[in-house]
Length: 142
Image (tube, rainbow, N blue to C red; front, side):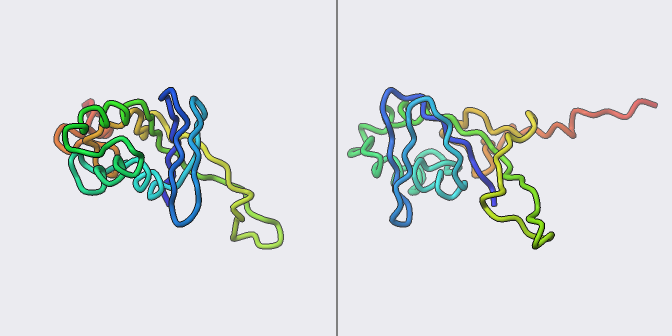
């Protein structure tokens, strides 16, 4: 499961709701959530103008009419998303498993970082055209 570290850089506390549970995003504090929750609350990974993105902006109270979309997208720009990987140690009694209590977040390598995701980003944090893979930077020297 992909996780996302969400950092609220807006001036206000944001509280999202998913599956009957509140998810508070305090100002300036990183919060680690599964990517599907970041998508539900913020439209993370959904293209600009998509139903999912607009639904999320409406649920946050940032969008009531289409005229408010530019302001809502600016507010969304105050939210930072970083890809993280959940890593852990195996439990001794069950060497092939790890409980959620043993799982800890780790930011992915800089090349895997989603960073400040564009409001137009796809689910993987890229914007489609112009996406770049670090592997394409390598050259064979003969």
